[in-house]
Image 1 (tube, rainbow, N blue to C red):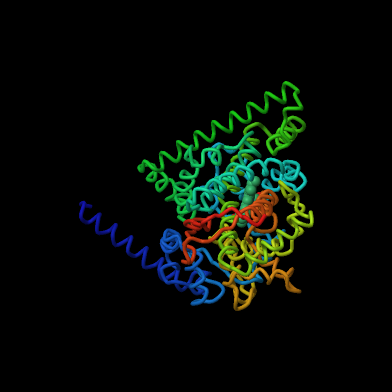
Image 2 (image 1 turned 60 degrees about the vertical axis):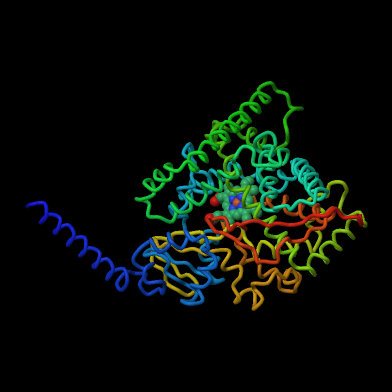
Length: 504
Ligand code: HEM
């Protein structure tokens, strides 16, 4: 066969394959009964472009308006926005498993898959059980003073910016705060963002570069991911980002080595009651029995760095944005905080987490802030069990990818009413408010619920009232919040003017 004939045969075979695939995917595939964009039914390109535009939550909402509560977003994948689907997909013992979407986020040096990316439920449950107590509320509150240390520095910086009358990007500062809290909890000390008032070691810009690339890779078919990731390394920004994480790895090594030294010296007085110490206690007491080595301990620190910094910062800045924007809510909240401070129910100079959670309006504002602006803005995809499953009245075949986007469901009018898009904290003070909780997915659900939830809530319930009792904040612009959703549903910025309060 000559070259031209070979080429013609190849092209015709490929054409036949494609025509066959299109006919099958659109009309014969087990998911062909589900509506959705025609391109999504035949290729993942649709999903990749959809995520690439960084507006997944808005586009997905529009999709549901057009096609209904369940939409085919890739040949083998469905997105659903129906309250009944939450328990079916994310409930304990639902039998739904994490998909390979999570794999690009996995650390290359993980011995066991880290909690976030583990796809084998059994192994995940046994590894999570080993460290579960580290993340309990009791354990977090034993280290509450480290949150206070970061809060003091944050407030000091806000004070300086208020005096200098400079504009403050709350997102950037909340990020520096949240990263420094992770530093205190896991790396022996703050990373120094707040002290340096800047991303002096480049971690923030590195996650900004890496997360979108990883997210795009996560929605691509697995066979093109490596090529895509390798392609990414052609760009100096990516190489720089990876370099910054070398610095992080060294910081983790040093923190672990220093702490090990203290343990081996038997110097109990020098040991901070932080999460690193808790992890070391597991290592020394049951490390061999549980196969929990120093590298596993380091993985916990990495998990918190990647899973707990930007998420917490988005929750803080997103909630603050809505409070500041809503005059009535702002006034009511400040009155509640001031009254509680006057009554001695909020300690000075540091209010305690256990005091803050008792303030009903603060609680309502934080719940509403995270409802309307959850930190995750993509579907959290799962595989249906091999035998298939009923989801919200639909029969979904086995091994189908299906997921809910918290940023879509949490604004669903069928659950939250016609004002679902409005920041209205009072909805959480109404009689049946507790029923809404079951449709809130901001911390995920079931056996895969966020491990750092208590740590994140500790930061939120402390920093928001601390800021509001010391400063008055106003938004610089009345424009609506600009956001992007590469896994994290991130505001572009939250610029505010800050004044010291003269009335306290
Ligand atoms: C406001 C802050 C936070 C938010 C909104 C948040 C959100 C989430 C969500 C939605 C998930 C589930 C993802 C999925 O199922 O696909 C998750 C899982 C996880 N989060 Fe968080 N997170 C926050 C803070 C933290 C912190 C501070 C840490 C670390 C200390 C952390 C560590 C983790 C881990 C390890 C998982 C995986 C759990 C598992 O699958 O077993 N998160 N988080």
